Amino acid sequence: MVCNCDEAEPGTFKDHMLLENKPHLILEGMLLGAYGIKSNHAFIYIRGEFKAGYEIFTQALAQARAAGMVGKNIFGTGYDLEVTVQRGAGAYICGEETGLLNSLEGKRGEPRLKPPFPAIAGLYGMPTVVNNVETLAYLVPVLQKGWEWFAAVGTERSKGYKIVSVSGHVQKPGNYEIPLGTTVREIIEIAGGLRPGRTFAAVQPGGGSSACIFDEHLDWPYDYESMSKAGSMLGSGAFVVFDDTTDFVKAAYNLIRFFAHESCGQCTPCREGGHWLEKVLHRFVQGRGLPGDMEMLLRVSSSITGLNLCALGDSIEPFLKSVLVRFPDRFEARVQGRQVAGVR
Image (cartoon, rainbow, N blue to C red; front, side):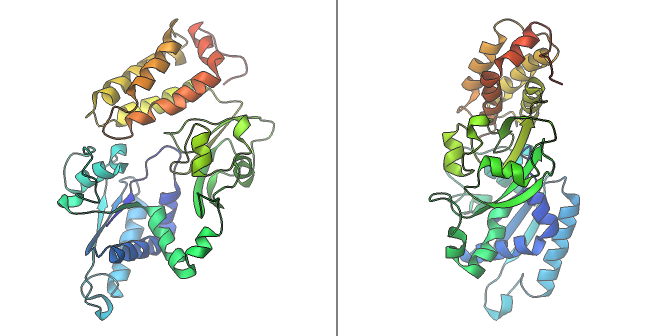
């Protein structure tokens, strides 16, 4: 049993909050999950930057061990369970489950070729279940209150609750627990609404890897199926709001630069394509875009998708394509060496 707490997706900060404020809830979820699959060893892989969270969780583990909840012959049942806490070293790619498993084994954090999938041959070649912090934390209330309680909210196919990390141009950014199916507009209102005097431009509903959705999607339900139909994804639940002050050229450049830097370099399309797109977008940011660059950005970014061992290469295209198609004038203005009026 492996708990993935290597939260590094741009815009996501729910696991960080749970780690620091609810360490025992995460730990209990890990214990329940391990017991459910008859595992005798559970691991939690914590992002290296989460120093405070690592210390808090380590203390919680020591308390659980002292109470007899971890170790040999737990509560006289004959069941043994050891828990290992491992800190990462700051690599985004280790959030991918097989890259994480390689890192746990002391290897370079690179995704593995699948199949075999971790459930067949995972950590040290053993069948392994890898779950996110939020998933395991929800085990406790679901078992306490019953699956009917959890399934009573949400939509027909996306049931239950979701912690949404709302950031960007809202007045009250933070983590909000909502029933799936809450509309995009309602989530913005829950987070205090837009800043005074500003108008809505876009939302990135699933973190840095997701495409933007726009005005026509404001009253769509925030669930897995609807976000997919809108051309994006719910992803990690990172909900980034953009108002009319956003410079989408700079925003695209910053995201592409992040993904290019975090590529493990194993796959050629991701390794080479990411840095190439970064260089072209840097020209746009400086107002030095060339004729034909926009069409080339779309062609090259789409040619990177679906050709890599993991989803990092696929993360390069969605945001860039969505804003390039929606706001072509913003990019065209940089070809002409000037900035669109009112954008800063």
